[in-house]
Image (tube, rainbow, N blue to C red; front, side):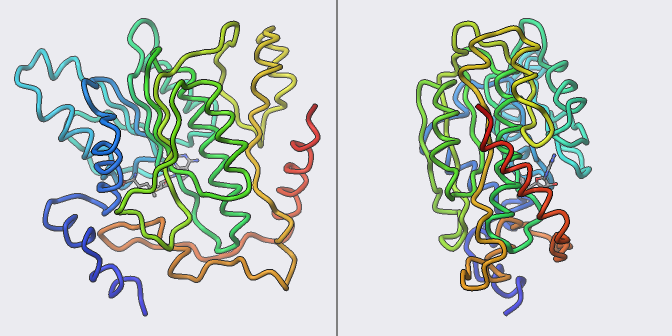
Length: 302
Ligand code: SAM
């Protein structure tokens, strides 16, 4: 059965069309807000991995459109970042770029530099899924760690971080890393997230930098964490945050293990209301080997 006929039966797909959301994903953020009140009193927010823009629409409608005066509107700062361009949204500043790149992270940080930090960072980041469960999980966790490291740079004390997480073997490790920075931590599966999908959302509030920790932009697949820690000169950075994002890649070449998602499931993280083109190609073998090597090296960081 094709994606279109499946989506048309979905209540959130129909609601999204009726209410003018660009993707049914809007309801995931709305449900997180209903459950945790993450948007209460927020004026400054960052939406990472934002295209086609339904979460930005939620932020625009709830934080910008509700302002009664021009002064109130001027105080609202929302920045949306994605690899892909997206159609403009009222009250949202767009930045096209890769959140795992230093330059993109610096542009976001620059926007929220100085005294005015963000109160909320959200990230719905997902790679183009390959259908190889462990690979998709690994790549998604890279995005999550990039988002977390940007959040440590731009969030004000007490701020909130909400991000998609593909649940898997690395969930508890990543959860521990997030709890270093936030007083409250939860993993939530909104009713609008399909039960067959491995996605859930981390909801972290009460941001608080550990004493002595110097925020920095980290991409574990690119950076040597030990060198970065030395660069900041902070013992706390070295001790506290190895920032390892990992998934169990052992099953990749095991034909007995059928962990591969069905094509319907593997596409479910791209729940756009309008048609989207999926790149279905698998990663070449060499890439898997490189990825496993990186993964292996990270596991052996002392
Ligand atoms: N929250 C969005 C919405 O409601 O419309 C949907 C986000 S979609 C599930 C995932 C997005 O992550 C895609 O638009 C993709 O381009 C983006 N993405 C994936 N890798 C990225 C990266 N390295 N940097 C920035 N965006 C990325």
